[in-house]
Length: 140
Image (cartoon, rainbow, N blue to C red):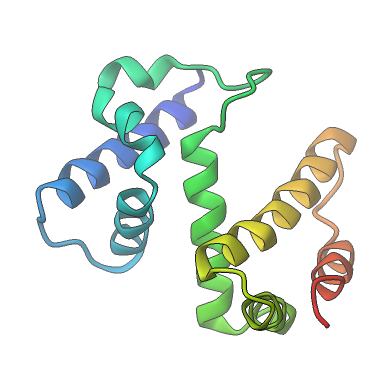
Protein backbone atom coordinates (compact mmCIF):
# COMPACT_ATOMS: atom_id res chain seq x y z
CA UNK A 1 0.00 0.00 0.00
CA UNK A 2 1.46 3.36 -0.96
CA UNK A 3 2.17 6.07 1.60
CA UNK A 4 -0.57 8.43 0.37
CA UNK A 5 -3.25 5.74 0.66
CA UNK A 6 -2.10 4.86 4.18
CA UNK A 7 -2.06 8.52 5.15
CA UNK A 8 -5.59 9.03 3.79
CA UNK A 9 -6.89 5.96 5.58
CA UNK A 10 -5.30 7.10 8.83
CA UNK A 11 -7.25 10.35 8.44
CA UNK A 12 -10.47 8.39 7.91
CA UNK A 13 -9.87 6.42 11.10
CA UNK A 14 -9.15 9.59 13.06
CA UNK A 15 -12.38 11.16 11.79
CA UNK A 16 -14.24 7.92 12.62
CA UNK A 17 -12.82 7.87 16.15
CA UNK A 18 -14.01 11.44 16.72
CA UNK A 19 -17.39 10.97 15.04
CA UNK A 20 -18.41 7.86 16.97
CA UNK A 21 -17.38 9.43 20.28
CA UNK A 22 -19.26 12.67 19.48
CA UNK A 23 -16.12 14.79 19.53
CA UNK A 24 -16.37 18.08 17.67
CA UNK A 25 -15.61 17.96 13.96
CA UNK A 26 -15.48 20.95 11.66
CA UNK A 27 -15.51 21.59 7.94
CA UNK A 28 -14.61 18.68 5.72
CA UNK A 29 -14.03 16.41 8.73
CA UNK A 30 -17.61 17.04 9.87
CA UNK A 31 -18.92 16.14 6.42
CA UNK A 32 -16.89 12.92 6.29
CA UNK A 33 -17.90 12.02 9.86
CA UNK A 34 -21.58 12.49 9.07
CA UNK A 35 -21.32 10.35 5.94
CA UNK A 36 -19.40 7.64 7.79
CA UNK A 37 -22.00 7.52 10.58
CA UNK A 38 -24.78 7.34 7.99
CA UNK A 39 -23.31 4.24 6.31
CA UNK A 40 -23.81 1.58 8.96
CA UNK A 41 -22.73 -1.16 6.57
CA UNK A 42 -19.18 0.25 6.73
CA UNK A 43 -18.99 0.56 10.52
CA UNK A 44 -17.40 -2.89 11.04
CA UNK A 45 -14.52 -1.95 8.75
CA UNK A 46 -14.08 1.50 10.28
CA UNK A 47 -14.11 -0.12 13.73
CA UNK A 48 -11.21 -2.38 12.70
CA UNK A 49 -8.88 0.58 12.65
CA UNK A 50 -5.24 -0.34 12.03
CA UNK A 51 -5.86 -3.83 10.55
CA UNK A 52 -8.06 -2.25 7.85
CA UNK A 53 -5.22 -0.01 6.71
CA UNK A 54 -3.79 -2.74 4.46
CA UNK A 55 -6.99 -4.03 2.83
CA UNK A 56 -6.72 -3.87 -0.96
CA UNK A 57 -10.16 -3.36 -2.48
CA UNK A 58 -9.05 -3.57 -6.11
CA UNK A 59 -10.61 -6.54 -7.84
CA UNK A 60 -12.96 -7.23 -4.92
CA UNK A 61 -16.72 -7.28 -5.22
CA UNK A 62 -17.32 -5.44 -1.98
CA UNK A 63 -17.56 -1.68 -1.86
CA UNK A 64 -14.47 0.25 -0.91
CA UNK A 65 -15.83 2.30 2.02
CA UNK A 66 -13.04 4.86 1.73
CA UNK A 67 -13.83 5.53 -1.92
CA UNK A 68 -17.57 5.39 -1.31
CA UNK A 69 -17.37 7.96 1.48
CA UNK A 70 -15.14 10.19 -0.62
CA UNK A 71 -17.49 10.11 -3.61
CA UNK A 72 -20.44 10.83 -1.34
CA UNK A 73 -18.54 13.83 0.08
CA UNK A 74 -17.66 15.15 -3.39
CA UNK A 75 -21.33 15.10 -4.41
CA UNK A 76 -22.31 16.90 -1.18
CA UNK A 77 -19.61 19.51 -1.85
CA UNK A 78 -20.83 19.97 -5.42
CA UNK A 79 -24.35 20.51 -4.12
CA UNK A 80 -23.15 23.04 -1.55
CA UNK A 81 -21.13 24.96 -4.17
CA UNK A 82 -23.84 24.66 -6.83
CA UNK A 83 -21.23 23.45 -9.30
CA UNK A 84 -21.88 21.87 -11.60
CA UNK A 85 -25.50 22.96 -11.43
CA UNK A 86 -26.55 19.69 -13.05
CA UNK A 87 -25.68 17.86 -9.83
CA UNK A 88 -28.44 19.68 -7.97
CA UNK A 89 -30.81 19.45 -10.92
CA UNK A 90 -30.29 15.68 -11.04
CA UNK A 91 -30.81 15.39 -7.28
CA UNK A 92 -34.04 17.41 -7.41
CA UNK A 93 -35.28 15.34 -10.34
CA UNK A 94 -34.55 12.05 -8.56
CA UNK A 95 -36.21 13.30 -5.37
CA UNK A 96 -39.30 14.34 -7.33
CA UNK A 97 -39.56 10.77 -8.61
CA UNK A 98 -39.59 9.37 -5.08
CA UNK A 99 -35.96 8.46 -4.50
CA UNK A 100 -34.54 9.14 -1.07
CA UNK A 101 -31.90 11.84 -0.84
CA UNK A 102 -29.36 9.21 0.15
CA UNK A 103 -30.12 7.05 -2.89
CA UNK A 104 -30.07 10.09 -5.17
CA UNK A 105 -26.62 11.01 -3.85
CA UNK A 106 -25.51 7.45 -4.60
CA UNK A 107 -26.91 7.61 -8.15
CA UNK A 108 -25.01 10.81 -8.91
CA UNK A 109 -21.92 9.45 -7.15
CA UNK A 110 -22.04 6.35 -9.35
CA UNK A 111 -21.86 8.58 -12.40
CA UNK A 112 -18.88 10.43 -10.96
CA UNK A 113 -17.20 7.11 -10.12
CA UNK A 114 -17.63 5.90 -13.71
CA UNK A 115 -16.22 9.12 -15.17
CA UNK A 116 -13.23 8.92 -12.81
CA UNK A 117 -12.73 5.23 -13.64
CA UNK A 118 -12.78 6.02 -17.36
CA UNK A 119 -10.18 8.75 -16.88
CA UNK A 120 -7.89 6.55 -14.82
CA UNK A 121 -8.09 3.52 -17.10
CA UNK A 122 -7.51 5.65 -20.19
CA UNK A 123 -4.82 7.73 -18.47
CA UNK A 124 -6.65 10.93 -19.42
CA UNK A 125 -8.08 13.90 -17.52
CA UNK A 126 -11.58 13.62 -16.08
CA UNK A 127 -14.09 14.35 -18.82
CA UNK A 128 -16.27 17.02 -17.23
CA UNK A 129 -18.47 17.23 -20.31
CA UNK A 130 -19.19 13.49 -20.10
CA UNK A 131 -20.02 13.90 -16.40
CA UNK A 132 -22.51 16.69 -17.10
CA UNK A 133 -24.07 14.78 -20.02
CA UNK A 134 -24.61 11.74 -17.78
CA UNK A 135 -26.05 13.93 -14.99
CA UNK A 136 -28.46 15.46 -17.49
CA UNK A 137 -29.72 11.97 -18.30
CA UNK A 138 -31.10 11.83 -14.74
CA UNK A 139 -33.00 15.11 -15.15
CA UNK A 140 -36.61 14.91 -16.34
